Image 1 (cartoon, rainbow, N blue to C red):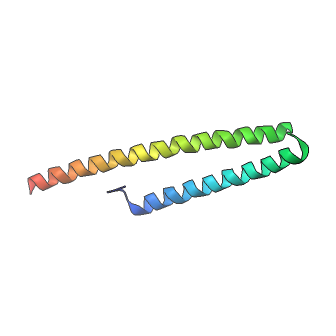
Image 2 (image 1 turned 60 degrees about the vertical axis):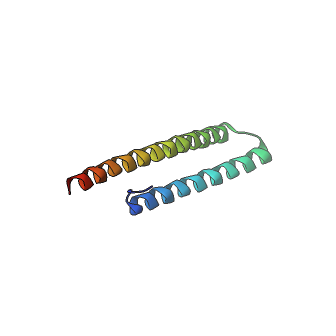
Image 3 (image 1 turned 90 degrees about the vertical axis):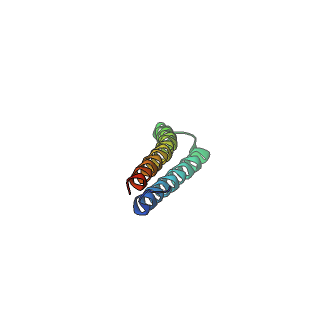
Length: 86
């Protein structure tokens, strides 16, 4: 991500990693509960929420990637214009 503040990029990556690990932990717990006692309504709801969070995470990753690419392009245009003025 050229031109993007490394601190922001690192914070986004760290948050994304934490979310991914949390979802994985939730799924593991839910799978163990399902294996042991079948699926309760509460567990089914939690599993559905975890799956929804995974889908949202994937969507947000795409949004971050698209935004970073657009920012990189805008920064490159600004640099080009500034270089042309000097």
